[in-house]
Length: 533
Image (cartoon, rainbow, N blue to C red; front, side, top):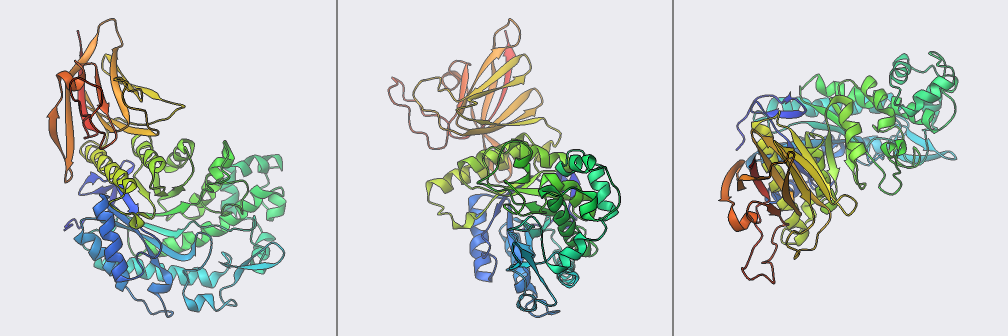
């Protein structure tokens, strides 16, 4: 059972637990997997069995407050107790006014009262199932409910199981670049808030910044006067509305409970292009949720929602290095609360944790996996390896780390260790194993040595001087609980006479065609040191 009662704080880019950094090696369950006590028990157990250290799960407004002013905390209490019993940390996801840019998790008393809680209007006057961000009553009701949730967690989560909370989910407007409802039009023809102008003026990386400059850098006026017509103006307009709305909800909760709060952004998987549009998440605002916390409007979100500790990104697109770096650069914190649970997603997890010092990663929908299936086996293995990396980070948060992903386009990378260059590559030095892509790994410096953690690659050495180099030591480890335990001291045949070490995918069979039977080691975790002679 978790007995840490200390409030969550920060150590560098990481959440802190027990006074040490705690990289979140998380897993998010499906949207309905926390809607009953039975579902919570089953889905959280699957997360534990997969090997994650943290579970991400929804808290639905309609189930928390089925009658206005009447709160039912049964499900969140079950979530906290179940996570604690299973040795997991918990990140609740507040499904309040919006989830994936629609309003299906609001209570029935909100859904059925369109006068009090008006809907957004898009296109040719079409009203959609999306509570307008310009309605004050919805904002205040959401804020009251979130504050009640936070108050309850403050008073009941005495073990500190909850690490952080996501406020809303993939906020934004689909179907148009901006809301065309009566309330929205009134805001659009009113003066642009001074805080928005300052945010745009102060961040030259925003696409709307350049348009604003070319339009005359006006500091006062309506949205049509301050900004030229176009998608970027409309996206900024919606960002200001959503950020102010979510900012009020977050502030109401933060006033009750001091715990990190964040929002997550939707990136469109089908239409991401290279360059600035990729960071926006799609072809046009409205194809992806217009006004959501994407990079082109990040400064508006940070200015109008100061109670949020960081902006997070859901990652279902290939690659993602530029997106990871963009989000990390905002406040020095990267969190990926949703990504794919397959091989490309696993590779992204290694890159995020290793290269970008992400505070955490979390594949989505893991509770639907068959734990006996091969795809689940790979994820289980990946969680084990990432928790090993997390254990090293906890012991030394300042250690230099580097993540890498190998592909046909980039089949190798080089790392430096003393007088040696470590060549990490997918070429099978014995000529008997076909490369599998993507291969992935993390290198973490450790005094005069280096930990290498990952799958699908080989390492060889060369000297940076005219002196040859070899392995001084090479030790395989396994993760036992949260501790790394040495299992094999490699030498001789296992290092090909001090020239190479393989990091195969798990369950690699005996290599055929060799006079001496050779099984590639399966640990995926090794510490090496080198010497020159």
